[in-house]
Length: 433
Image 1: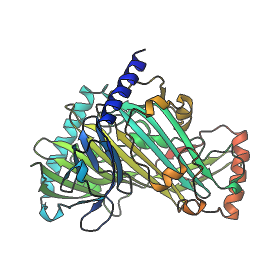
Image 2 (image 1 turned 60 degrees about the vertical axis):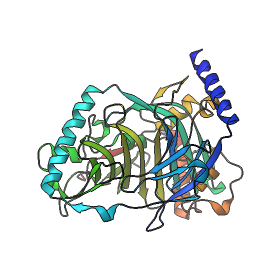
Image 3 (image 1 turned 135 degrees about the horizontal axis):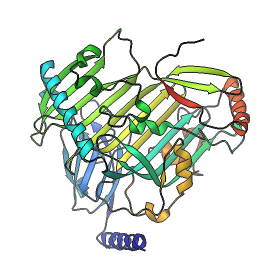
């Protein structure tokens, strides 16, 4: 009953806003110097009205013509417009010219204080949770696939206990692939990448990788990383430390997370992390042929943090996995303090997509929330869009080779006979017998 009261109130609020002539704003955010899109930029109007730009820098948002729209991204000067005057292209000016070199010793001190503080917050706020909008795009020969869902998770420092509440999937596939029952990846545990962070409080699937916090507390970061540090002051007067950690050349190690941390120096708060995972191996077991194959994967990630609840919390997150002709990209958008009411819940175990299928699609829920703008390819794939034009498919959706056709035929047969769960993350290259 409470849920339907909430939905009714949300609809009434939406009708009142509509009577005030809501405008739909659509724009693209670009770097003022290079002209390149700025992905995942924050677009803020109020605690209940906001979004982020997609991977192509595009965003769409409904607001009043008199609302003030603030567009920002770490490393850029903010742009502020009245909604009625928002340009089609928003140009953000980089602040790199104001950066100054700092000593590596100061970077060590900042990182040490930061990690200690985040660990204390994780213990104190271990039950804190937040609501998110989730999108997964999967592209490989012959197939473009899209999954979208609303989910919740424990959100302090690192995402944990992922739970889906409503979702749906769309698939666009070449007829040559055959059986329509084989939907893309079918079963996947790639949601484990949502649990990866530069500071881990629950190692879960990531027990056998190195993250920056592993060495910072022991003052050994410089043994595995080349560390550099620059500082600048942003438009709000925050003194930012931009600390870059890159794995030393010639260092043999398990998979290691490197990247750039943006830190609010005076308040000792992590604002953003841009990272990539080096040395990640994927072991695939072929039970039918009693063989195994091992391949490396490329993985990059981006995380924005919020602190308005008094602790470090995941605000938005994105990640991309690349391997030859295969790409998986996910996006997580924090719904902030919007009141949400969920009728269903499915905690994710080994299979993310089955959890989305199980909770089903709640159309009432989706009409009451802002969603991140889809890219052109995602819009065409979304939920079996019949308007999809073959000539506009993604670069990954190409006709499969003869070898790939044979492999797909084998997979269709194997998936009917074998249990799933054959993909595991592995620490380094295993010794062969």
